Amino acid sequence: MALFGMYWQMSAYWHKTVRDVLALTLLILGQAKVGGPNRFPFKDLVEDLEKALQEFGLPRQSLHPESPFWHLQDDDFWVVENKTEIPISEGTSEPGKKVLLEHNAVAIVPAPAWSAIETDLPLIENLTTMIVNKFWPDHSVHKRIREFFGLTK
Image (cartoon, rainbow, N blue to C red; front, side, top):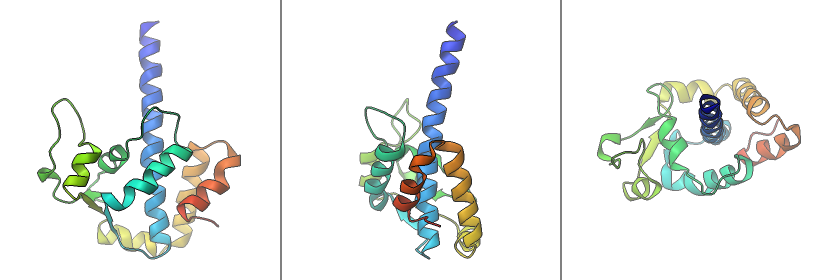
């Protein structure tokens, strides 16, 4: 029984974390759709990301926009600039919101990936549809999600 409880907690945490990262991904896709820059200062994302997590995330006591910002990292898609200069407290896997703001953290989508995304509107639409359908199964929120992120059809 304890093993099942632990699995359930891990599964719920994973699902919440995935939704948070996907909310950031939808913000990125929205910026690509309008031909915006591939550079994302954390300070410019905080407000919209917190609103997205509040509106479309799973219920929680506090919002942590630093989590998706930090955990989306991948050399081919999302790179946090100067990440070795951003301190992480012992016992945590990411810097806190205050630390990211103090260090003017910035992430970029590398130019080859950005060019591939921003010039391919059908790709943006397909990714958006896939993400929204899979992780927000309640179809009644799909239109609001798309409008929020600037990803209307």
